[in-house]
Amino acid sequence: MSAVHQSRRRSGPTVARASTRPTSRDVAQAAGVSQAAVSLVLGDKWRGRVSEATAQRVREAARTLGYRPNLAARNLRLGRTRTVLLVVPALTTEFFAGVYTGAARVASRHGFGVVLYPSPEGIGPARDPFASAQAALDGVIASSMAAEALTAIRGDQLPLVMLDSDPDGTTGAATVNLDIADGVRRVTDHLLALGHRRFLHLAADVASWTFEVRARELAARLRKVPGTSLRTTGSPISIKGAEAAAHTALRGPDRPTAVVCDDDQLAAGVYKAARRLGLRIPDDLSVTGLDDLALATAIDPELTTVRLDAELFGERGMQALLAVLDDRAPEAGDIPVELVVRGSTGPARSH
Image (cartoon, rainbow, N blue to C red):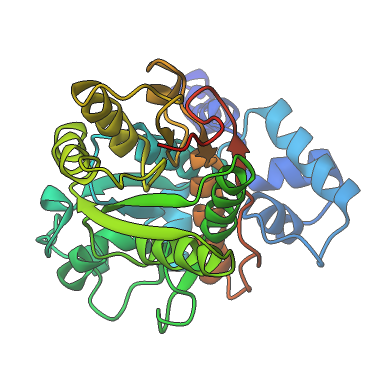
């Protein structure tokens, strides 16, 4: 073998090393810190261990070098899959699409993926979508309306964050809630200020803590005001189902002047029932919803409703799960909601 050939063989590995992707050591050298500091910052575990300035320096060095952590090696070392399951009752409303968007946004910033899984028909237990969810996942985020789907999926092992769930009734799980009770109080006070005293609650016919809160808060607020009355009618969460339920409830001489709906879809069904009965909104009947879906501004008159920030809800859910995985306490406090007053509510008329 010639000397030139030997030299080329010896130089081969050097060239190959120069063309490999940057390592954490390269990032550490560029940022002027230790590899341990790089690991803390890029693993999002730096708070309280390194300064904000150091963390920023590490991130800038990684970005400049085009450094990407070896997730496969890190996951093997940490015993994590970097995958989270989001369980929702259905994919038929934009609200849960927003929840997914918010959760996925936070997850991606931390190197996690989110798998979206609807509970069949929104009710009953679901089969484990994996060969073994406990081996394939790091944790689960679930809506209370999909709680029955969790038994086979989670077992008693996976970390769990429950959305829209009783904080006193979810043993072993963190909870993230919207301030639904405040939203119902705002709606009720708005209608009372308009002079309404005869109320119909068109309630979602779903066994769920969040709907129990709505019913409880509405009844409690009205009990404090003399001369008020409240009737409750259940309905499936669909426009057609709500139309049928409202058509029956709104007939008769002593009909309500205001309808409080658990969901914007239910409110749209009330609109259809009111038109069939010759009732004008809001002249003869005020109607409110809850969610502030796109539907709320597509119907005429536009719907007075409570705006829920679905994307922030999903973000907070994912942040809570990350906290649980890192043995930290999730952020406390319910997410504020907003009453949006539009054309579907007006002064009560006697009849």
